[in-house]
Image: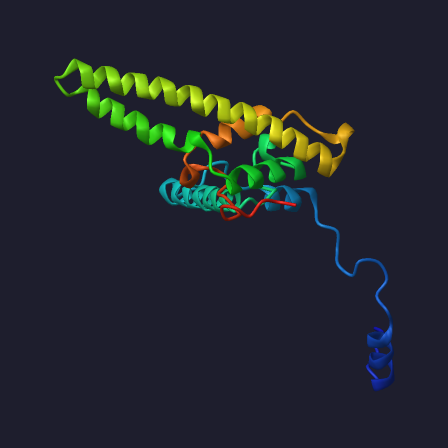
Length: 190
């Protein structure tokens, strides 16, 4: 006599109401795990994978470029990070610097060198050297001003050496500075 399980409604209900013990599924075998981990080192469609990688890299570069231009601290290079550097950038961007005119003046002098008159060429070069001296003096003065302002705002012991940073930013054309200027001219930081 073979035993037949009795399928009464009461036994089926009790079996479904019992909580499952353990994880509720069988443990996968080693072969199944290895098969699940297998993936090709190189995609089957290499051209599509390359296009996707380039698109992803371009998206990341665009995001970083926009973040850096807007002055987002996450995307700034280390030399531009921190509240003191932000203060220096804002201070330099708020004032007019003679160094901003330096690059356009160099183009004018280059054009003057093409003229056949040596007197015009000499006057252009002398004017350029004189302007170099004025721009350098302005950069030195800016370095002292910025250091004094930083000491007043952040304290004597928290001041970094930022004179060179301020001078290099002041010698660039305003529209070519990175990060982009965040303040208008005359709106000095407090």
